[in-house]
Length: 257
Image (cartoon, rainbow, N blue to C red; front, side, top):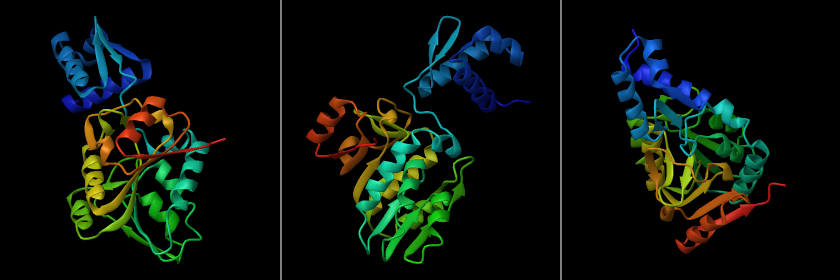
């Protein structure tokens, strides 16, 4: 029997695929009352995933949805490679850094081969894999529970480990970046460990391609003013550059051409 949580996840997947969903369709499909389905859609609207409309709901395209890592890797891969290369150039010999899990921060790992005596802590198993055979890089995993399809770790044990260390720099990826809300993610565990990473680092650098702007989700990670630097491409909205600069954020726009 499908649980309420499973049903709502399936309803959301249907709306993501078709951009909309109708109450009568879901009621017939699950053999439930339309009142129950309306409650499901109202719940999804409160999380920000959908917008209710007459007879059903529409997908909220400004919402930052969870995506499998392998799917993320296929999106804007050339831009991400350029951003990762630039971010790696900011890491100096002897630095101790945190690389958040993600497809863009993974690109940083690909450009560390010539660094010396660098320590990298990460919650990304894929990132640790890329760095494991580099004798000049010391790799630390946060530990914790692995998330399905993301190769990332989270949990209280991971958060506790971060309390024991201090790092020069955190490079944090982005699911959604809204100029008012800041950086958000759909996953509560991801948000929790990211906030601990922020506490453990002296310098906070967000790295993202411009497709993530004007998107937000329901789990808060960081306000815009908490960032020291943002590395992105020329697709960033101009008013974001103005506002972030006013907040003291160093915005680095990398030519992806």
